[in-house]
Image (cartoon, rainbow, N blue to C red; front, side, top):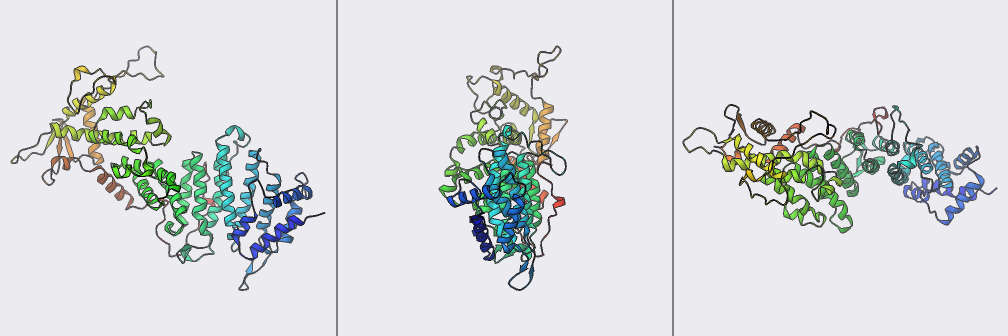
Length: 555
């Protein structure tokens, strides 16, 4: 019986191992159909000589591989030191051969199962102390293919009903995407724990050994989690990176930018907007200015812009004029203007949960709508108090020893007017600024929870601002540092602190939002350090990430 083609492929792999040529191994171990003619001949031989329905086919195939690839046996390195056998490589090659023999692109679920086996055996081969690095490029390519398959199946759950009940080691159910991440993540841990490197993992300003694959594999895992909307599971990856990775700046720009984008998005979703803008700012600076990466720069800029907006730092016209910021001005400029003016009515209309504002659906698609609505409303109120103070606040004379003050009842009038204006018909002429004509405005609409609608005895709720609510809002603004002053509960007035030392009472009483928030976040974090971003190099031998401490995705 002819087994020449299988032997030839094995001989080619053996030669590549002997030459320490990892890229040659990658070029041989193709994974995705359609295959070149020589691979079609290989597949035909495999189906003839090692049929899938024969119980002994796998054992006979592995025996041929061990015989044809002597580099997997025990041996010695160039300096005469013993090298342990690499039987996991023989198993990996056998799983690859059976995969290309059996793969059917119309049976995605079976392909996923087979790909899981190939990836796991590849992880085992990667773990070899000295030769494992030779399969790293191959495993990275396989992980990318596995990621596409996992995300595709995750978006089509009806195709994967048979596997959706899969449980992880802790007995919790996991999706196909989470299962793929748990498999690929073992390769990441192998790279992080590589001890066959110089101390710190950096040699000649480049990642040494398997550590070169840390961020490439991490980015594949993060891609799966983001595209399948499993973002809570990202924390394990970032914790492992923080524990044992070399500094990020030693890695290629593509790895850096991609990783920082995901890290920034993670902190954004976790409401760590200050950390998010630090990370995304670096990603934006490192991303090349070229038409080929315009889409990537646009994504980074989008979340960087929103993170800064929430922190009170608004985009300039120069930012809006950039190619990657096309149409951003027409979306975000109205929002920043309502915040600047304290225009509560317009802001509430734009952020209404009925998504009636023309750009609300797009903001939802970008997953920033609720963050803007929830986090920026307090900035609108700050501007409202400031605007009313400028219009109706009391400024003491040069010889008076009392601080500047604001009667909070004036804020009640302004807030009530704006709330009524928000409920007015869009056809009604809008008031300009704070010229009040409350008689021409309707009462805010009544609200009944849909669960109680139609029940007897349920009174509709009509929200109307009163002095107690305005006082509480003012206290909240003071507590957040957005207003510098104190409230007189008896007089219902806000007193401004520090006016004599500042150029104006408004500047003293209403400090810059960005400065307030950035200073607070630095103090809380002890600087600008961000979890998941390794900036400094360890001088020791590095840390080991133990598999027993790794929380599986979905746990």
